[in-house]
Image (tube, rainbow, N blue to C red; front, side):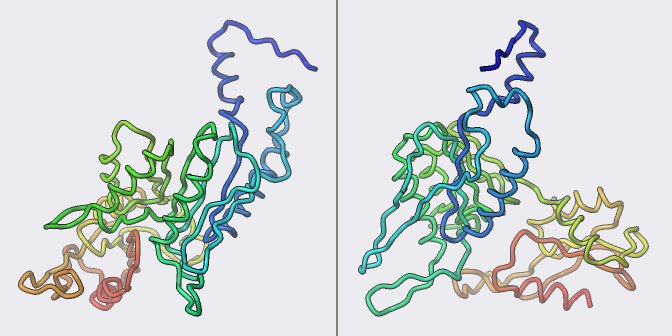
Length: 305
């Protein structure tokens, strides 16, 4: 066994705190997130093995280097459509990261002779089933949702439910320590859980810029040839940030609605009105956080054309 000497110097202690993990890492990739979970697992395995250090020989790091961090977990269903969460290995004392994609509509399950597509509600219920199977035995439970469940229903405009707030409170009450999502539709939903857990909404602006620069090599990123467009008022902050980083002009659309009617639970959009300088002869970069039906994005692109 190698001896590790820790000096009383505060810098040395801080360095050790950085090196020492909270608890042995484990990943649970829910059914709709298996492929991404495998990629994350492979990356961590390669990263930890390639960054090997002498101090990792200590017994404190006995579980640090592994060939696999994925937990064997699944949610089998009964013939009635009900289900249960099952863990086929112990997660006691582990630092668990549960990855789930509530918008994966490709999965199905059977109820008798009928085949159902899994909805966001089904995915969220499966997530809660797995948390229930953990039973509070893990050292820490972290949930990673690429798309925050029910983030479209984040505000109340009448006699309506606040589904996103309720979902966050449910997860925290079940023992979840941290909730991590990407570009939440409205990050203010974290006000539902201000003191009872961590909420992180990761802004992927760098990935946006990197992706478009790698795939569209003939872009001229300057204010004479390019412009950032927000398709609605809600995305203005996102567009302002990107426009400032890239040094571009920004324009935005606002939705003119008919408030005398309700169609499919919402006031229909009469027109998209544009605010901003001329887009003539420019490449335009329309940035939004989600596409549901695609109707707004098509209307905005048509108006710009």
